[in-house]
Image (cartoon, rainbow, N blue to C red):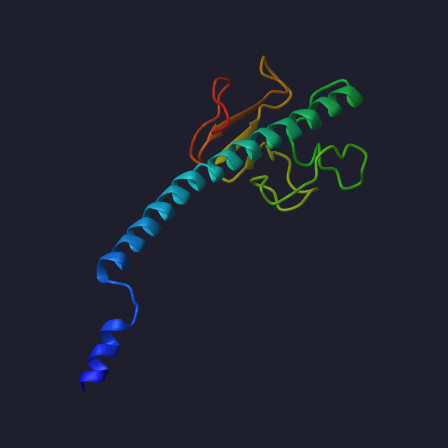
Length: 146
């Protein structure tokens, strides 16, 4: 019995204090990583929004250059499946449409955390593309990507 007690005392191991210090250090490092990574998704959403706005503006201007007027709407005017005026690829994020040929009036694109609205071919705002953060927001000329 004496030999077992002596052997147990001689064996190396970690004390409770040492283990607690390691756990605290790991917690601090995890907090730093989470804080640093938290803003990456926000920057990604902003970059996607700016890219989508630029793509739609380019499609609208290409339509204008080809036809001499702004398109009535984004879908089907700019997503013509026949290829005559296909300046944008149709996708399901164009609200109110079910296909590239489908109903005129597709003036809105719903992004992840933002809404893009095309102002159409009439009035003082003809051919303008506006954006607003969120899904319920109403884009205006003064709103910007989130």
